[in-house]
Image (cartoon, rainbow over all chains, first blue to last red; front, side):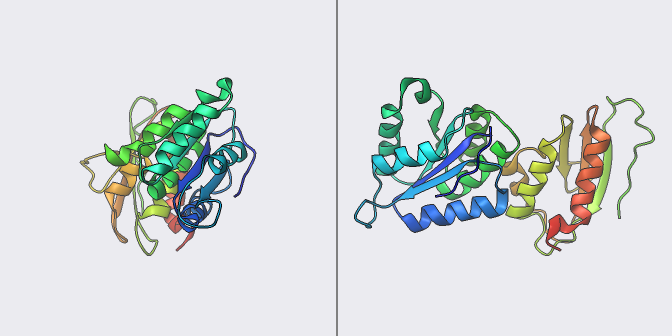
Length: 133
Length: 104
């Protein structure tokens, strides 16, 4: 988990594997820098592979920014659990969190790059989703 | 190393062009692409890059598009910049390329 306070869009990385999530976060920090609030979560609470809603909610809290948060996910449960976590957010925050349709590693780096320039949540999401365009 | 045709562009509506050789070891791969787009985004000007003076031109503010250019080491990178802060943008971008994106 890592964080930096700024008005830029926050990035949350959700993978079934804690190693992938942490590694992707390392890439973001090293390639993009510290101007973007960033958090990652991965694995189930027992240390195995999986994702869990509580962990995702915690990551959203850490990466929270008034500009919103973009979530990058890997497969299946990472997406549905992220959507569930978004649903559980207070109403005023719900509309400012999006789950991007993008590859988790590349999408995280690109979303953070876009965010580091002060772009809006919409622009951050659009940029990350260019990978599948 | 580079040529800035800034003199003919006293009006900001005329695009400025310049070029520079990619000196860093791996060319415009992921990390330099991120640095290039971050630099470009600091300016209001429209900024495009290409591997040939006639294009095709790529939006330098899109990290995904910049990475897709896959410019190798030694390639000549062309810039086309238009906007009120175009001159400053071009200077910053050329400095970045000459500096090998901080990794040469």
